Each structure stands twice: as structure tokens, then as C-alpha cells.
Image 1 (cartoon, rainbow, N blue to C red):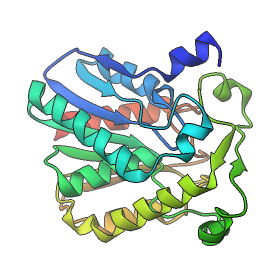
Image 2 (tube, rainbow, N blue to C red):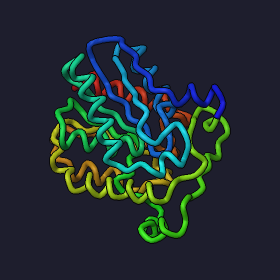
Image 3 (cartoon, rainbow, N blue to C red):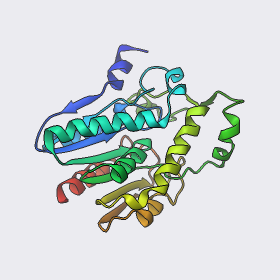
Image 4 (cartoon, helix red, strand yellow):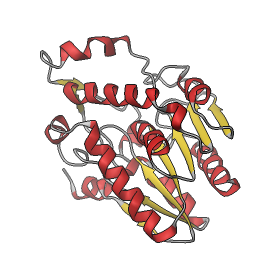
Length: 245
């Protein structure tokens, strides 16, 4: 791993104002996925904290030994730290981080929940084979086709199948408890996202217990909406949502 990649993996904390936001990255990724969003919010007076989740930012073998309750515990600890400083905290999660944001919304006191390309349901039918495949195939290859986006990230080149199974279990747990999320919820999703099911955003909004909720569907966008072209639209939507509540 190069020095640049290690820097990309590092957690960050921008202390800028009295409004606080917890940013959570995705599966096999790092805070680099949400750093541009964090910088955007910080430039507008929002204090932003983005932790590195267990098993990430080092080696795929570390992720293989990690399970979803560890990610939850880290997110809860980071939330408590921010609440100790600011009181109210908005939670924003990209991809798997969106599942964690919804989990926190269901089980902890947060101000709002924002999900970005959240895998509440996955699009790939091969997920059905994961419980068996984890005993036969240790890793599933991962590749980001856009070199400009890949250069901004420190993500793994392969996914541990056993940990994918844990991710699926977390998604199931979150789905069971969506009704417990009663704070304002914003969902943002690209209409060409190949990783998550097309109905994911609709499913979240239909099942949360919130009365205040909003959907932003991005035309022509894939999964990495925090880094792809037009990402400023995502950033502005998140900032507006946070400041309105």
C-alpha cells in the first residue's frame, strides 16, 4: 500500500460549526469515499466526522475476519463522541454506511438519517448463493472501471465472501427495524446503480416510521455517487436536508 493510499484511508474530523454530521463509508472502502462530501459540508460550517470502520483500509484478510456488529459498535461509539460535543447529530451513510445510518436511526437518538446508494436490497441474484459460496470461494473480485474514480479511493480489489454474508445479515436486520426509524430520512440513489436493487430507495421510504422523508433519484448515475460526475448535486442535497431539519 502506498503512502497516498494510506492517507486516503485515514479517518477525518472537520470541526467547523455547531451542526454536526457523522459520515459513514461503504463496504471494503474507506473515508475517501465520503471525503469530498465532508469537505463540502465543512466549507459550509458543518462539523464532520468520518471514521474508518473495522476491517477496512488495511488488507482484505482483515475484512474477512470482521463481522457487521463490529461496524455497528464503531458507528455507535463515533456517534456518542459527536453527541458529547454537539448534542444533536445528523448521520449520513454511503452504501453499507447507509445501512449503519438506518441502524443508528432505529436504535439511537439521531437528528436525521441520509442514505446514499444504500444496499437495503442487492441487485445481484448471486447473493442467494453466498451462504454456501463462502465455504467454497474465499474472495470475490472487485474492480472499479473508471480510473479517475479509482485514483481517489483506497478500496480492496476483492471482497471476502464470508463478510459479504455478514453484510447481507446486517441488511436483513435493518429491514426488520425500519419501522423504528422515526426521524427525517433522505434517500439518494442513482437510477443506473448496478450494485443495489432498483427499488431500494422506495423500499426504505415505504417502511421507515418517519413522517418527514424525501427521495432524490439521480438520472444516469451509478453506485459511487459521492465521486461520480454531478456529485455536487448530491452534496447540495445533503447540505440542504441537514440545514432544513
